[in-house]
Image (cartoon, rainbow, N blue to C red; front, side):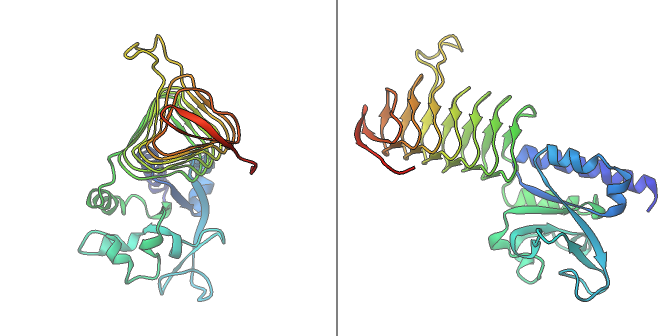
Length: 290
């Protein structure tokens, strides 16, 4: 493959990675040996941006690969994109219509009902990009806004619309439901789950394994609008469960593995392992599980 074409694929790969990162789409990039050897920094750059990278090659061996009759696409063992990933392959550029989930149902390459990631064959870039853009438009994807300075961990999953502000930090395996706003400098740990329609004010801290129900808000302004002069962001400790429709007021700390009942207004610190509910929320029981 000529160097100019490899360079084109390299630039297209970084461009689509930046787009997917901005949209909050968890993607997997398959690198052929020639691309990986020509650009040894590409794998590291993609992984630094939070994407999975796998080796991808073609084979005429009938015992290898998942699709095709002449040259079958093969992946590392940990990537079985037939069942878990939305595939954008060179095959689709020859179709007369844009790629949709319905197209997948007649093909063996993926199950659209379980698709959680997008797979990119770097060897086939940039030819599949027009179909990807049409897919984003047809499925209402692209309404997310993620600041370039935000840091997002691996296996991030979200539904649009979503806003992530400047210098926000999000850990691994985080799920964020739609209509959620995570403001600047918020710190979200790993395995945190937001059910949607949530507001996380600037500099709020949610530690690992926190569950947040829908329509719950975390406030930091004691006397709004103070424009940052009286911001006291709340802290939610590891493993806490925050029910739906909860309001966490400024300067509040919710302890480890505490449970806050739905609809509560939390005005004071919540002890670890406690169950609180009400307006204002008060302690009702102490949990013994961890």
